[in-house]
Length: 209
Image (tube, rainbow, N blue to C red; front, side, top):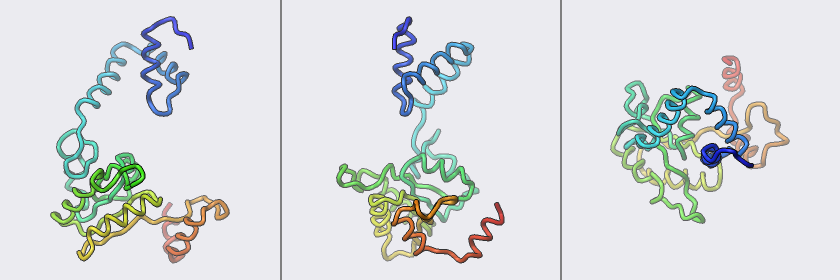
């Protein structure tokens, strides 16, 4: 790709560093910025720069925040007896978008993976245990990917509360809505059979949609 402007080339190179953005897409984005008013471009770049320099992580749940504690942790309307444990910040956003959960969160920052050198000390597990034991939380919901590493992480965390009255639960796993059984992997199908629900539960949910 040949450019007549070094400034455009530099901008394309920077945009193409973003995941999922190739050089052609980056060029389209740069050319779009050229068509925009200078004030709007300044607003765009200032917002990105301000976000990167000023954003912090919540001291309680490790979610992104504008201050010491995020809006979820400080929201008096949240259920403070539940904490949903997730791998990343993106998982918080995904669950929040469902509008079906009103408790608190705790972002681990990853999952246990000994082969990659990721142990308990590299994750926010210690702060989770301390937080739960020091508060009125009575249920820890494990919302971690159903992989070997994810299940290992969930098991490790559950062992930290052995002997306590803390209830450890996990999100339901099974066949995706609209999916076909022949395309489901054996583990997913096995868990769907083992964790089957009364038909009236399913019908009642569907009737509300």
